[in-house]
Length: 137
Image (cartoon, rainbow, N blue to C red; front, top):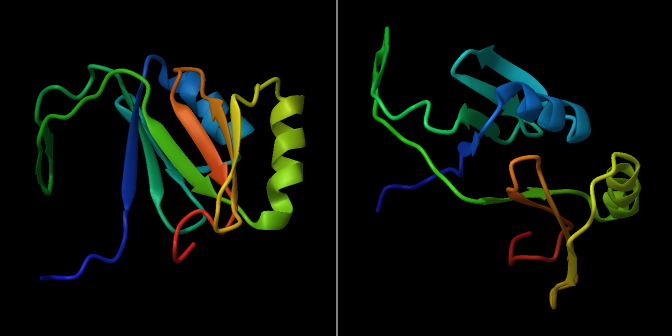
C-alpha cells in the first residue's frame, strides 16, 4: 500500500466568502493564503489548509494552467476539528464567548482530551480539541 502523509486540504462550502473570511480570518485567527472570487484558502498551523468555496460555485470543471480540477460541492452542515494545546482550552472558551459564539457541546474523552463544539456562520459544526481525543493525539 502506498503511504499517505496526512490530510492536506479540508473544504467547507459557504454562502458568502466575505462572511466566511471574517469568521475564519477574524474569529479563528487563520492566515489567508489565497483569496479570489471563487475561493479562500487558510493556513492551519502550517499543517494543513482550510478552503472555503461558495456553495454551488464549483459545479463545473475548473481549468487552470496546470490542468483541470473536477467539479465538487457540498450542502448541509459539515464538521471540522482543530487541534489545540491543552493549556489553550480556557483561552479559546473565553475568546469564543467574547466573540458571541455559543458553545453547543463539551465532551471529555476517555483518553483525557476535551472537545468544545460551536458553529460557523454557515452552520458547520466546528470543534477544538485538546490532546487525548484519539490514539496518537
